[in-house]
Image (tube, rainbow, N blue to C red):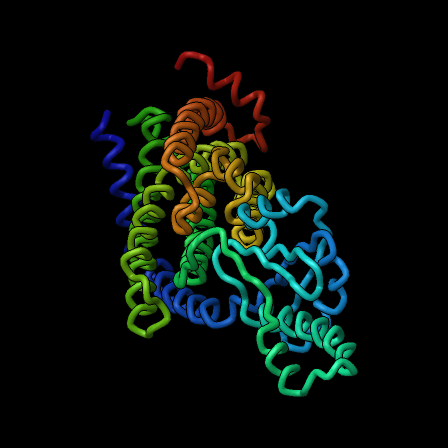
Length: 398
């Protein structure tokens, strides 16, 4: 039995690795990956607004702060925070970039690790303007211009950080986003290849010959394993080449951390591929023509697209938020979100283990269910097969 599975898997590996499209696609992917790293490293800080919460008397500086920050090339969005403790929690979770409290002349800023220098400059300007208004009222009391200048130079915003600054934070985020892109493209590409391979064998009647020698589950498992090995090899090559080139170009100064991220990515790719491949194969077995493949795969690909979009949004806006943590535990999202959180260092060990356990359980369930659908539909060439009919046929003893 194992030999039959391996023969089928080896055939898939040899066929795909020798294909010109595989070699060209891998080379192009490496070039695109390096370009993405270079662009993201240099421009990432400009991608999102700085979110500032204002509490108490500090709410009075909302509009002046936005105007002053805009003059410095920084986009700031402000919100009112009624409870400073709640605001501090939002800063810790990444929902806010900074919390500003205190009177306009004695502003206090709370950040997670470091404050944007443009934001610091804007707040310092507001504090100095407020202090200047108070000092101007004392000119009649004999205050000299030197006194005013000395007082103004001491008027700065008071900055407090919840954690020590991480100088590699932006690079870690770029690495995490690169991993998200790689995993999404690999899962989508090789999952689709599984479905298209099933449809091709079914439409050409090759599957009838193959099933005369092996059982349906052996054929399915061999195809999934073979294409999975191809995808794993391609992901490893692209990731390693991109890492080396980015480090050589000076765009990446944390090669050891990036290499660890790549290894985690390969592990989660395997789990994610097994999760989605069974569904792709089952969906492909429901149709007999390649023209119908995209329609039957739409629900599966939509989940992957949703995961990709959510991952980008959550990682850039709220990498330590509760929503990000919860979604990274759920099987459809874990293969992409969890390795990205590991790249950022925001995933505790218990969450990693829980996500892996849930994903493995889901893989087992989908393998059983997808196998039944595949077995019941693979020999049906009389049009599109309904899932209910395929399950019913697949449950009959062969």
